[in-house]
Length: 179
View 1 (cartoon, one colour):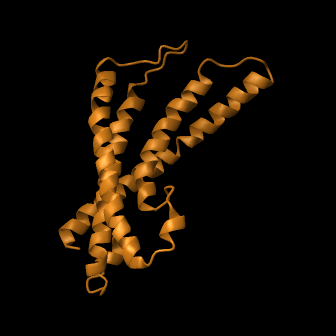
View 2 (tube, helix red, strand yellow; view 1 turned 90 degrees about the horizontal axis):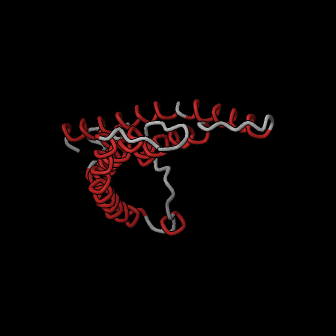
């Protein structure tokens, strides 16, 4: 892989890794909130109006923003049952088709999510529940996560594409592309 391209792909993966590490800490908020909600509801018969909604609002960005780096780690659900029976050449061919499909899927979702996020941000949309927190930040994370996922899928595709040509290990780029 050309050095400039490798630098760009590594930067995308590093950004997604950093965002992943930050979003992991959202669970440090969600778990105590849910614990408090369960104790308040079942031990004291005094459920909160905010507990479950806060957990849902935090879990959305956690789930969405962790996805792009999870793609890099190959941690998404996959049809490994079929894939593992194929030889490496066919596995590579599948990857060369699968990553552009992910890019296309993200692009379509991005096309539809940007106007919704923009509208939510402009109107400072809230949930209209009894607690009524702002939900526009959560809606804005949808196109952000899709853009990051699309970039990471492009990075993974480029790594697969250049993997074969760098197999000789002449410049060490293929080994370092994983981060």
